Length: 449
Image (cartoon, rainbow, N blue to C red; front, top):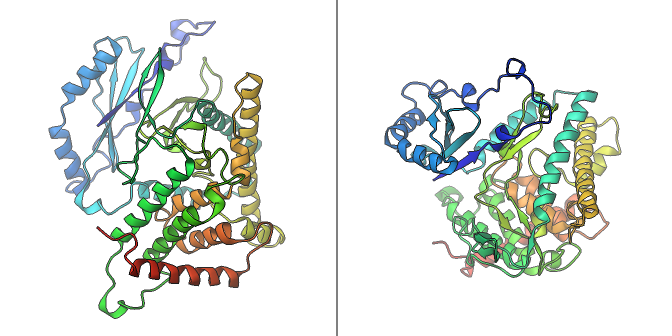
């Protein structure tokens, strides 16, 4: 399936138009694309890409773009391909408009078991590792960070200002009737029992919790004979299974996802949410130009296929914000000599800035007469349901941190408000939940299949 990106910004005019010889030359995205250059000969991934390129109907894509723009277009010689997608660039003869068609690549047999977000996770971990070597942010870097945060949060708040009484995706739209809400766009691929539309946020999270726990059981490898009765409880697969069981338990049996303040507006209205508005889906300017004067201005948001009206609790700290429990942070921040003190201060400041920019965006919308019924900044700061959902979103994605993620779920879900949970208490809860999970599965709960 192809997703077309129309860069309408090239059509915008300014109040003062430079003479033709003064206009900076705009670089096309395809000027930086590598085609096959990054793929080694006889690499299985390159072989898959070559088969794909020989089979795809580029004329059909070209015809579709021409209908979209009402103009003839030409296809750039170079393309861009990764593990999951391939991009083609089309432009009009006058070079004033372009479209990027993004086409899903077929899965490679050797990579089918790899999660959809693992490539992103690996990239993020490398960036994180290199980023940790920076000890000081310059004033210019701080200004850039604030500029990006302001736009990022404003985009999400603007979308959230459009609300609907039910949870689901827009199936059609008419100027007379407005949007028609149909099933949730991601419900089918995530194996939801009820694809929607849904009338409460609890129904939404119940579907997620059930589907993900069942999927985790289906992915579990049968234990070897030597470990058939005593699998390692700290292995990634066992921790993932336990973590999703705990999340399901919290959704089904605790008040976190059923009542305020943790679950605001459980029966709506529900905000419109892109659902994947991370740094990987935002196009920005790379340098100042005569029309904006700023680098890192947002030009476009891509990948709208998952957009939906969703619960407020799906707002959480996304990548690139690191996950660290408030309990861990408080311990580190009490000791300025702690080796992680400086990094923790920076992480805390980044999250504080993210919330602050949401507050500023919400104040701006309110001044314009479009107040949000629920504060996103308030959800980030005070909703345990949001934080639990953020934790479970990372389970199975970020390798090597499964133990901390599961323990964070325990602290968030079973701890007393305002009281730090000691290590022994956390381990005690883990033991109880493992026993409950084993009993649940022995009774045939969430039968594989």
